[in-house]
Length: 339
Ligand code: NDP
Ligand code: PYC
Image (cartoon, rainbow, N blue to C red; front, side):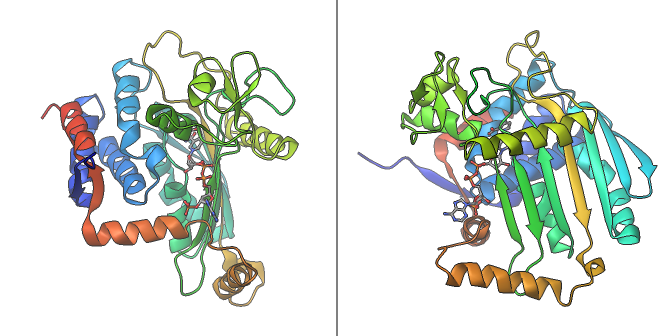
């Protein structure tokens, strides 16, 4: 059987194509640029569950009227180290971008600051939100909740979202140390990809509509649910993410928003929380070098790679050769753009 045809597209060209799709489906030009860069960055880095695979979901959510592509976020200065943003029913990334300058001012002034975003739709990976802080010499942690599709450990009803947590730290002489992981055993996007490809999942990732363990991704998507990673420990992390992203920010819990009136809606309407720290204030000596040291110790001890290493390698290849896309996906994107 012949291999499916692949094209290689430059980052800027992919951004331009995705931007046209967003604008065609009701997103303002400024919001479209932010979303397009975010999505193209995921594709470039091989974060395929949140790259161009997501464009159909963005479009159907926009077309359903569930998310406001034109939303203008409102930034509030609520304390010496506290920034709040109301995304006004729009996507999270433009809200984050609007709050960022004030957040950075406060981090530089106080050594630490937090950002609470509410009434926002996050449909992407989290690493693009934290990695740029580490590139500026800062340490950042962020969490976001999503849509109820994870049964608590030992439970029988989906309460949590897939609730990722991402962390970034500068590391001397190397790209920052960044991890970005769902608190479910697998991201919902990867279940969709497995279902589309006809692949089984590993055991321990989900249950079917009767609550029975299954490795069939279609059974998970068809009335079943995911499990937290690491049993009761993942449960606590997922619960913490709900508390920080929703209870604290004034956003919805993953099971609280009602999208039933918007056929085709896919983007969770929740909240996101950040803590950003200037490590220079920690009383340490050579913070980034110390991070490099501990990372090296982990590798010397036998871990074959660190989180983020695969992404950075994939990015380097894409910067050299272009971003690989199947010709079929490229055609699908052009159709969404109305080309
Ligand atoms: P993975 O399990 O694929 O990866 C989680 C982390 O572990 C990554 O930082 C990854 O680094 C690292 N990693 C993977 N394999 C290894 C290994 N062998 N050794 C060392 N490190 C490793 O991610 P998830 O499935 O948990 O999540 C996928 C994406 O889905 C995330 O980007 C997340 O933000 C997103 N998501 C978004 C949600 C939302 O509401 N917006 C909800 C849930 C998930 P590397 O990237 O370099 O492989
Ligand atoms: O992959 O779990 C996921 C996800 C939820 C919302 C966006 N991505």
